[in-house]
Structures are given as structure tokens and as C-alpha cells.
Image 1: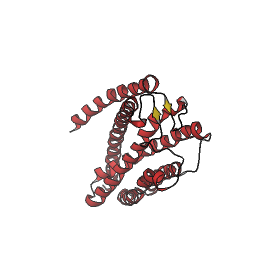
Image 2 (image 1 turned 90 degrees about the vertical axis):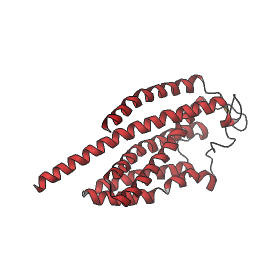
Image 3 (image 1 turned 135 degrees about the horizontal axis):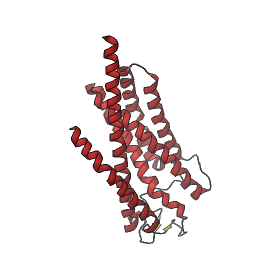
Image 4 (image 1 turned 180 degrees about the horizontal axis):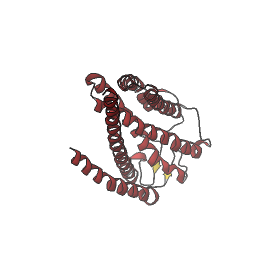
Length: 239
């Protein structure tokens, strides 16, 4: 099993590098000129969309991993699920932060302000703060088993922030564009149905999913080692 994980890690790194280089090249040389629904040419800064959208989805996926792992931990008390939950939370908070950063850059280009208190930006901030709160709960409790249980409960309850963020622009009036509607148009035609836009997005999703998987796997291994050290210290203390 360890050799399999080692092989996966060796394969992931070149795949991540290759996909990221491909993504950068496609954003600058392949993605089409973008227009809004009035036919106005969008600034090149809007190409950050190809980064912003995938990392936003991955911030949701990461909390889904926290959610499922938390349920499995409470059901089985198996430490590997707790390790996976906290690892996903630490990776997720990074992606959630990047969502806020790229979203602010996009907001500046679109609306002239880095921040607007509209539903999608606000609920994205809430999701980030829920991630931070989850990690704070873990750090504030010394006893390992108790920390894992309370964190699991928090991870399950806090998952509500994911559908809240995803559905926010459909539940409330928002200036944030609906990505899979008719908001953006490319020279290749048909909004997000344009071939070059779809291909660039798919490459971006693949690149960031690989990056997510690589960081998550690395962080999971660190969490296992930390837990083994904790158990060893406990055994020495009790001896």
C-alpha cells in the first residue's frame, strides 16, 4: 500500500506541473476574447475566470470531503477519517481564500470595487470563515478524541455553507454572473458553450483537481505521522 501511495505521489507531481503549464499557455494564447451580454469587450483581467471558477468548485469539493469523512468518523471512530477530514479542511481553507482573492480581482475589473456585499461574495466569505472556525475548534481542544468528535460535528453542520454559497445567486438578487447561463460570450461562439472556453475550463479543472489531490495526499500523510507521534508520546508517558 505504501509503495502504491509513493507511486501515486511520483506520478502526481509531473502531471500537476504539466497541467499547470498547459493552463497558463491556454489562458494567454488559446482562450477567446470575451464579451458581456451587451456585446462590450471584457478586459483581459476577466481571464482570471478560468482560475476563479475551478478553485471555487474545489473549495466546495473539499468541504464535501470534510462532511463525508466526519460522518464516517462518527460512525466508525476510525482515525483515518478524522485525518482525512482535517487534511481536507486545511487544503479547503487555502482554496476558499484564493476564491476571495481572485473574486476580488474580478470584482475590481467588473464593478470598480474589490469588494461588494452581494450574495455570492458574502457567502464565499462565510464559507472561508467556517473553514477557519473548524480548524480553530480543532486547535482549541487538547484531548485528541474529543477534538476529533467535536470537529466532526462542526464539519457536518458547517457543510450547509456550501449549498448556501453555490445557490446564493439563484436565491437572491445578485450582480455576480451565473457562470452557466448566457452571461459571457466568446469569439468562438455560444457563451460557456464555446469550444475554446470549455476546453480551457476543462484543463483548468483538471489542473486544480490534480493540485488539490496532491496537496491533500501530502497533508494526509503528515497528519498520520503526527498522530503516530502523539500516540508514541502518550505510551511513553503512561509507561
